[in-house]
Amino acid sequence: MGLHGASMALKPSTLVEFLWSLPPLKGLILTGETDPRQFKEWIRHHAPTLRRLALEPEESYNSAFDLEYLMILAETPLPLLERLSINIKRTKGNSDEVSIYKMFGSMPKLQSIVLRLDCSDWSGVLSRRESHQSPSDETYSLAVPEDSIVDFWQRIWATDTRLDAHVRSLHIRDALINSAVDAKLAQAIFFTIQNEKPARSLPLERLEIRPHGGCDFGRPLFRFSADWSAVMQHIERSWLVQRRYPGLGSRLLTVNQLQAERPGKKCRLPKDLKTQAEAVFRKVWPVLAGAEGDWQKDWHSFPLAV
Image (cartoon, rainbow, N blue to C red; front, top):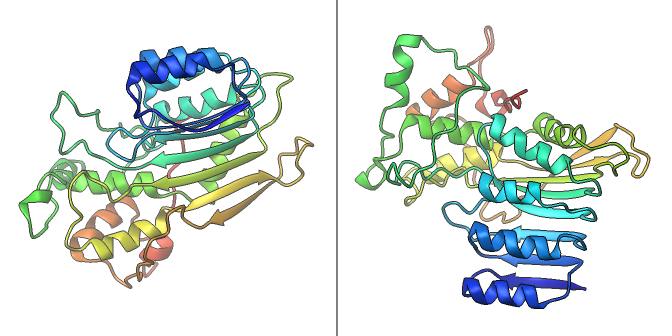
């Protein structure tokens, strides 16, 4: 038995009572939000029989499942779960992000994952109490003089409105790093999950990766949004990673780029970036010695923390 499209926007107590009233399900798709206590209650009720689970929070700040929810998921035995669709926060491949991938690997029957990577950053518009901490820089370094880096990254992003005065160069930098998903990173995520598989478990067969939200800083888009959106659209790539010989446990993979889940209007790629955009872009991806520099080709993903 499965349940499609139950909404977590229902009154929390009503939703929990409804889910508890059902016999253990094989498939469940939930949209909206719930608090951790309620999440723990209903997931444990259905965990023994679940084979397919999709958790689809609303598209707003904190739409991704944070570590508290993921820890509940990790602590709940899901012995039969085969397919999972979930939205998680991308944090520049740091140890927190890697621990999430490893958690998926601990699920013995899990063979197919749709992973939506939330690259948005609302930290600049939230109060310190509400704001999540900025992801650490533990997984990469930027080739700039030490005495100038702090001043550069704290500069306000130039726009024609004060509405975007909270966006600094460091937010743009993080958006670039989070959004840069290439085939190499997609494979690394696949193997990070697979390598955590316990003995006698089923291998991961299929991983779909869909980054989104790189231009979302919590306020209206910038005046140069068409130019900036083109950059994000170019590097924020979706991938399907599959085993070349399904069912045989072969480590040979096929990696194919997918169309965006919500393509929208295709932006024309600018030949050159505007001055401030190029300054940040080139701090992240410097032009190699002796090369002319082409931003469309010079970007790459950053490795996961080990």
